Image (cartoon, rainbow, N blue to C red; front, side, top):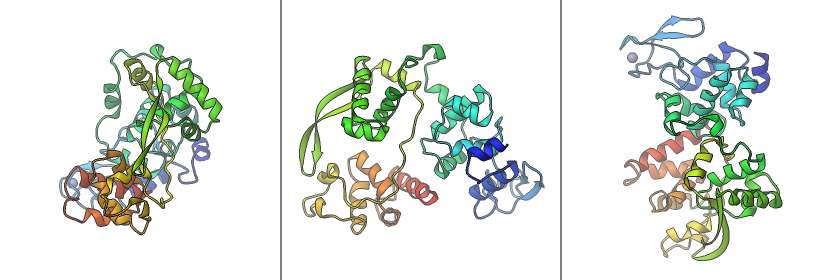
Length: 330
Ligand SMILES: [Zn+2]
């Protein structure tokens, strides 16, 4: 257990405090029945794992019932360590947590399915996932996929990193931006991009990108999403981009065209004009702009928008609620 304590923050030293933490995180206002939502269940067991029985629907439950962590082979302290871990490749998890290779693959798949960076946001998703993550993960891969089929076993770590960055940028990106996201020099990144290009995984195209109300022509690298590249991606561990939590001061120029001419988007200032910006982008035709707004605009502006007519219809309403919840937790 000392290994787990050293691996993680001082948050959880052992199974009992891990369970305590999880109960407080899952039910901040008191334990609720996961099935019917009734409050004040009777306590069935005081020893770990804590067990309750719902007074209303009579169901027994624990802190992990109906979550991705239910009936897991590893303890909650290990789960929390994995949830806070940046490097979630199965061999790393297996080594750091002292767990078996198959278990580490299941944990890594569960973490990847959350599509969240390390921390409480990732934990929040794990707590709401009822389905069997192993099955969900398997369904995304060809049935016959074997480790020896791995087409990227011979890629260098730089090439893998660059490929992972490209996956997070479906619209393509300039080599300098990829280098900065990958934490590599521009020269190294360029040579990785060229290697990926010669294998047919990446391509470079002159693209016209929106800049204010006009456009610029720049060389953009992106993944060449042919079958081989998609198979390769199945073997590439997902590394979430670190989330930038600082609030922006301006609407990015590529979204300016979404604002009608009555207001010049270049004059909009954040956070002062955040509400107006939120109203336009959340409801607009550009999905990337909407995601930027959900991730970057002040939470209060999202909340104010959410209360207005037109923003209370799914799927927009759910997307706003999810963003507010995630960012309030984080
Ligand atoms: Zn109940």
